[in-house]
Amino acid sequence: MARISSSELGNKPIGKLLIKQSVPASIGILVMSINILVDTIFVGNWIGSIAIAAINVVLPVSFFIAALGMAIGIGGSSIISRALGADMDEKALRTFGNQISITLLVTISMVIIGLVFINQLIPAFGGKGDIFEPAKIYYRIVLYGVPILALAMMGNTVIRAEGKPKFAMVAMIIPSVGNLIMDYVFIHILDWGMEGAAWATTGSYVLCLGYILWFFMSKNSELKVKWEHFKLKLNILREIGALGFVTLSRQAVVSVTYLLLNNILFELGGESSVTTYAIIARMLMFALFPVLGVTQGFLPIAGYNYGAEQYGRVRESINKAIGYAAGVALLVFVCIMLFSTEIVSVFTKDEAVIASTPSAMRWVFAAVPIIALQLIGSAYFQAIGKAVPALLLTLTRQGFFFIPLILILPKFYGELGVWISFPLADLISTIVTGYFLNREIKNTLVETESAS
Image (cartoon, rainbow, N blue to C red; front, top):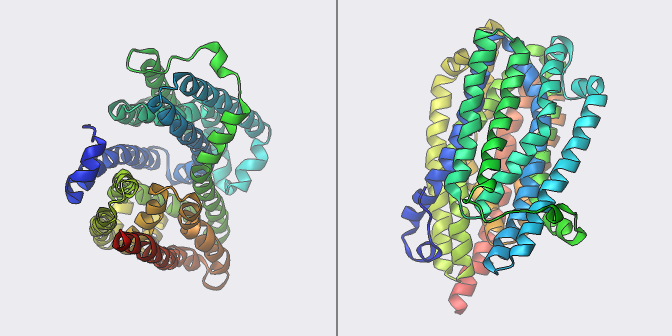
């Protein structure tokens, strides 16, 4: 992946920059999404539809742990980047050492708690009825790999902070490919069932961390930590926590929505409804990868030009990013509307699931063409360093609107109420984001540009 110098961000055409920045980000997201998608297909066809539901029950735990590692990584990486840029190598090393220490302390504690309360936590996350036993098997094995996952997520962001995006992208590809190979061996050939699926997932974490450890121990990395760097420093931990809070909050809300949806759907339609949501959730991760890639590509362009006070280029980057993302989202929408039945049939042979899922999937994706505005709008505030509005707008869809909707609408419309909550939350959050983005453009970009 070619790196883009800061001067190019301020001089080259916005359209070309967006494409050049978005493609690498999209590749990383695509590889991870394909892994999740194919993994679900393997599990559904080789173990059964209940296995898909069981894995979906455990996902909130995995998501939250991954978010924890990512939050510590993003918070520390910001410090490391600035420290390296200012030739403060010792601060960079101590920050990295503190990241490793706090990640291990927190995640090992969570593993112990998770294993002690396993029989209470799985039903709480929606693992009831026939889902309980396979979810318990998967949960226990995956939990062993939680510290490894968190360290891998944290390490990946630090690699990016060192300016080594190629290595960071490879670190995302290795576990994805490894997981699929191990799925085939453990489930299809050795017939280990849920245990095979769980060990394949945990094994993929080990592969990822192994590659990341190799990177930091090789000459490719500038960060060569010593034992003294692992000693926790309160001022560093505070700075890591403050900078990583936005990421942790966003992912924590995602985990909460999984928890609520699994429980609500189980009460409304049993195991098949949980399986339906599991399939739709995988498609959301996979189908929207290019939209998320455009969002990631937009961030450095907007941030650089805002800092350089080139407000005309900032507005152009907003408009083009929304246009590109909306175009891709519209294509996704059309494909889902036309081929939802064929898509579902790839995941499972369960006739009840195949009959009910296409309609639900169409409802969930109904407002996808407009989400570009919400994603780019919230990303803009993050790019210019306004953490509070970035956090609030990021949480509008999942936290402020979606959760209340799924708690209220099913009481009146049953399972349909769950599915229509998705487009309603998308619509309302897009309107809110559009209002604040438009106000910010007028008050900051247009007026400041006119005054100068």
